[in-house]
Length: 186
Ligand code: G3D
Ligand code: MG
Image: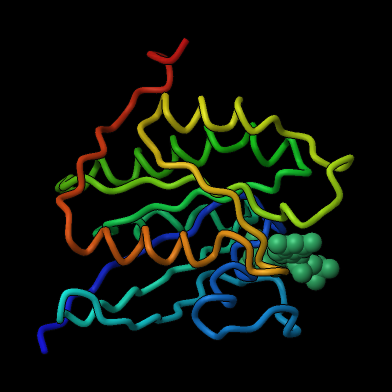
């Protein structure tokens, strides 16, 4: 069987749930005693689609500012960039613009071949009164930068199957994401 590898980067502020989301679909578990991610975790998810084995190689980056210096090169060669925020944290949503800038800066300095972009609003299991980001605002932002949009809960598994499907599908399409300059957004 032929094999395709997809390099997927998960980026976003610390504590939004990047490691929890990745663990959920690569290990099928939640709440294992994982510590703050230092540098990068790499986890693999394998599945078969259209008779082809698709290996998702998921890079889960440490989101804390002090790791910034080591992050630039990790974006290189990524076919999919997943930017994660926490729906109960407006700060983590506002920061997506900075994450986008960091990704595009790193990638535009390389031989850019395009990537598929996905924004994830995580922790949708938390009670509605804690929600701090309007879903329509989040969807509009994603659309403006050419990203797909999805809401997930690593805790109860909501949206995770859809996420995996999107990631696996990216093995079968040419990436089309343009590098959007932030100052062109209204
Ligand atoms: P990070 O990798 O983005 O830094 P983590 O984030 O995956 O380490 O998650 C940070 C905290 O958020 C963890 O809690 C984790 O259990 C929690 N979390 C992650 N995803 C979800 C989710 O979907 N729902 C809820 N309710 N919590 C989530 P602790 O308490 O261990 O710091
Ligand atoms: Mg982490």
